[in-house]
Each structure stands twice: as structure tokens, then as C-alpha cells.
Image 1 (cartoon, one colour):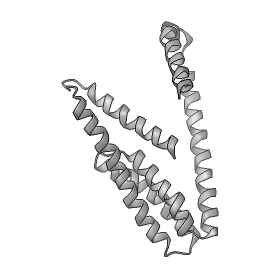
Image 2: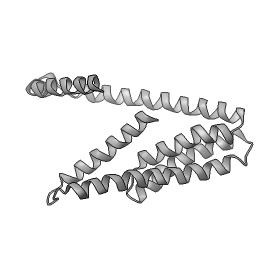
Image 3: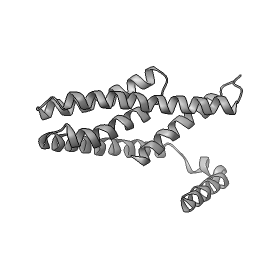
Image 4: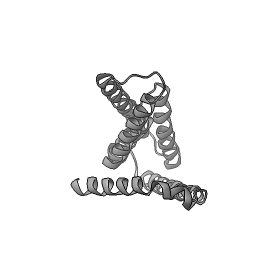
Length: 169
């Protein structure tokens, strides 16, 4: 869960920095910090609300296939609702998933449901990761070596900075 929250936070920060690069936008530390907390905490609140509502529904059901689909809908709904209100869909989905994966699994799901949900999401995870690496491979084919050589210094600095940050952590 922690790594997913880190990813979600990174997406929020990237979106805020990207919006600051728009022409005519002025930087305000207080405004930027406020925007970060609004988007992050608002996304988490949406995720908690949808995750808890889903938990209540799951606790009343016994059909493992229906419960699996409800979990899938909860993931997508938390993202969609948060994005609709200009909040973090990633953090909303992670929060809903953590709530369902911990409390929902423990107190609302039957053993057959747990097996079905784990198998389904493990398969989806494998499929999406495979597609991601295929797309990365296709994108790398489009990059020619002569386009990269002009940026070797910057790439070296980025690699050293990343390795240094990981070492410090």
C-alpha cells in the first residue's frame, strides 16, 4: 500500500507542477500546498467512502462472482468519482482497495470470494503489466540512438540522483 500511495502522491505532484507550467500561471507556495492537500485528502476521502460502502454491500452477499464484480466496480467508481471532483483518482482507488483488501477481506468476504477476487486481480495485474512493457518496448523502438546522444549528460545526472536518493532512503 505504501508504494501505491507514493505513486499516487507522485501523480498528484506531477499534475500540480504541470499545471504551474501553463502560460499565465503564477506560483504560490501556499496555493500549491493547499492544492496538494485538497487533491490528496479529498481523493482518500472518496476512496474511504466508496470502500466502506462496498464493504457494507459485500458483507450482505454470498455470491463470489457478484462480489468480484462489485470489487471491480468499486475500483473504477472510486477513480471516476474522485476525478469528477478534480481530486486524486489514484489515491481514491488505492484507499478503497486497501480498505477492501484488509477489512473487507477479513470481515465481509467468504473464502471462495477471497480466492476469486485474488485470482481475478492477479490476472488483471499480469495482463496490464505485460501490456505496459509491450508499449514501452514499442516506444523505445521509435527512439533513435542519435536522438539520445545529445542528452547523455542529463541522463547521467538523473541516474546518479536517483541512485543517491534510493541510497539515502
